[in-house]
Image 1 (cartoon, rainbow, N blue to C red):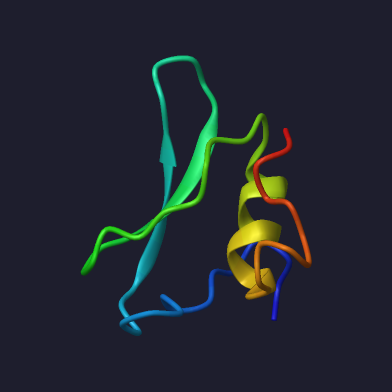
Image 2: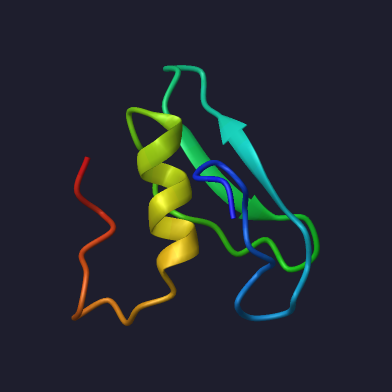
Length: 64
């Protein structure tokens, strides 16, 4: 899997996409259920968090 390729949503299996906010931060969101990551300063951090699939106590995806 390429480093920028997104896995399906861990909750519903829906397709995910990279979003960008007005302040240029990035997040990943499911097109079906709306599940999303927090916003990151760059694309690779957002993709890595989305694709990790670990419990919050194992990895803090809220850090930018």
